[in-house]
Amino acid sequence: MENFQPTIQVHLGKLPGIDRADLEIEFSGFQEMFFNEFGIIIPIIEIVEDNELAENLFQVIINGEKQPPFESLQEGEFWLYMEASQLEGESYFERTWEARPGIEPNTLSEAAIVRGGETDRQLWADSGSATRSRQGYVVFSVAAQIRAQPAVFLTPDLLHYYLSRLNEDYPDLVQAVGALLDNETLLENLKSRLNDGSSIQNLPRLLEEMLVEKI
View (cartoon, rainbow, N blue to C red):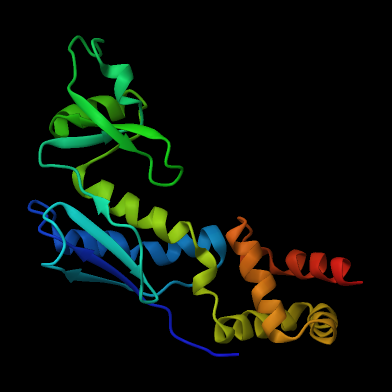
């Protein structure tokens, strides 16, 4: 079973107004976020300036595999979780708004990219609407692409570490699973469950389910 070290790169085209240092700080919180969500450990994200990307594009590369590029918001725009058509000809906060169609990057459902500054975005946010600033949209979109495939970060070494820790409290369970499933089968089974939304933090329950299915 081949092992490897997972990698995540975020390639940026010319994105004026995007503070790279702030972006690194926001990305640094991903390790805790994804451990809490999936129980997985992701690598530190590397930011790469990529002159081959169009000006407003950014692209995530996970374990060397290029993900579909995202188009950044333009300067003077913010993202709003509302269909752009709902803004057409309507008045919100005693004014009309110019918007174009966008997407919610986790679900690919329709959203709006609205013309306006930070004060405008905050107006919507204070009303309870989900919004993202131009920089926040980059962070939001990168997180969505990582969230779509958590299993690619589960390596043989990481699985060995999880099982070693679990063996301290559940030795009988780890032994029973090891007697029925080889490491490669166990790894692929856990990857499938991760991609279906399970968390490795529930590893005892996941292993028990596998035993029931196998017996």
